[in-house]
Image 1 (tube, rainbow, N blue to C red):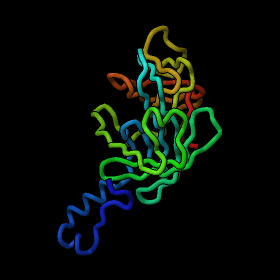
Image 2 (cartoon, rainbow, N blue to C red):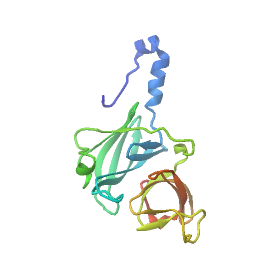
Image 3 (tube, one colour):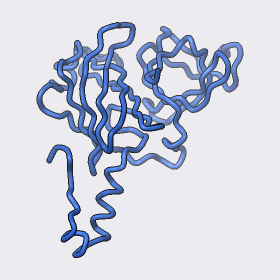
Length: 210
């Protein structure tokens, strides 16, 4: 796959096929949504994201995992990002480039566990294909993304006490933030057979946006 700057629509190309060039330019516009193992939000000239992928293991617990948050400013279809693992102060720089097929992520150094779970992201872009959202999911309404920090986080239909029974998330589950109230966040989780939403205490979530 050709790296940035992607398709070029010069004067001759525009004269011969203006519609084609217009479509290519539109496809490169950064958009919120899921890109393979990464979910991103594009807002106000910035991008925030969460990457989560595992490999191997038993009973749903991977032997190797690659999980981190990212954020940074956008310039056209390219973002200069900082990435970090949950609970760690160290930042690893990188670039995120939106392409016609999805996005490409490159880091100056791998996060722990990533080479075994995904392969290295250093020196060669890690390709991510954009997923078409289902009718029940509208990425344009996402406000942020993050990772669950609680060992067990019960999803609530409204802010308040946790129900005795119901869906729950576990530490490091990636979510999209749909809404906020004082001390609470409404999140979307797409890691199961069907997407689920609910409210969590804000303290049980580490978000990507500052």
